[in-house]
Image 1 (tube, one colour):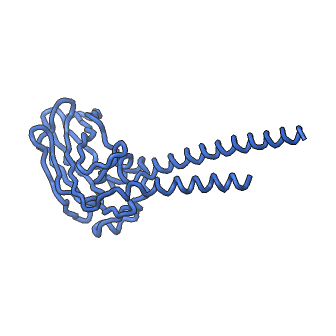
Image 2 (image 1 turned 90 degrees about the horizontal axis):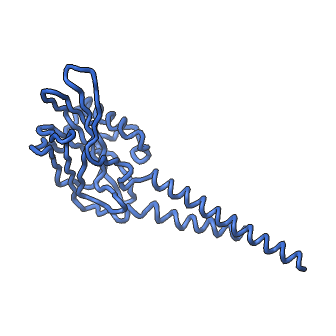
Amino acid sequence: MKRIYLTVALIIILLILPVTKTYAEEIDMSKIGSIKIDCKHENISLKNMNTKIYKIANINQNNEYTYLSNFQVKERELNNIATSDLVKYSEELVEFINTNNIEPNNSSTTNQEGIATFNNLSVGLYLLEYESLSDNQYTYNISPVLISVPTIENNIIKYDLEINPKVETTTINSNEESEVTYGPKIETTKKSPKTNDNIMTYIILLIISLLGISIVVLYKKNRKKEKNEKNN
C-alpha cells in the first residue's frame, strides 16, 4: 500500500513541474508585439477616441511579473491577482498614474474605423486607458484593462493582439446607462502567460483523478488478496 501511494505522489510531482514551467520556457523574451484595438458601439465606429498605454511590469523566464520602477511602490503582488480583481486593480492603477503624473509609453487616437494600434511592444504587462467620447446622443466609456504581451489563446502564444473592448454608454441629459459588448472580450488573466487559476484547477483535477485510480487499484488488490486467503 505504501508503495502505491509513493508511486502516485511521484506521478503527481512529475506532472505538476512541466505544467508550471511550460509557458515561461516558450516565451521569446526578445520578441516585439503589438495591440490593435477595435472600438465600436453596435455598428458605429468610435473614431477620435484617445487611448493611452502604460507598461506596468516586465516578465522573466520564470513567467513572473516584476513592476517597473515607476510602479514599484505598489503593494499589490502582481503574480497573485485573481481574475475577479482585475477590473478594480486596473482602476487603482489609473488613479495611481494620475496621482503621480506618470506619462504613458505611447498614445493613439482611433481612426475612421474606430481602430487604434500600438506597435513595437516589448514583452510584459500593459495597462490600456481610454478617454470618454461623446456625440449628440451618447457618451461612450471603456474601462481600463490590463493586457499581457504575449497572450495565450488556445495554447498558442500570440505577440500581435487584437481586442474588441466592452463599451458602456450613457444617454446625454439622462441618468439612464446601458452596457453594450461588441465582439469578443479578452480577459487578460485567462489568456496571459501567468494563468495561475487555470493551472491550479488542472492540478486539483489531476490529483483527484490519480487518487481515484489509486483507490480502485487498492480495492482490486484487497479483493484479490481476500479471495486468495479464502481459497487457501
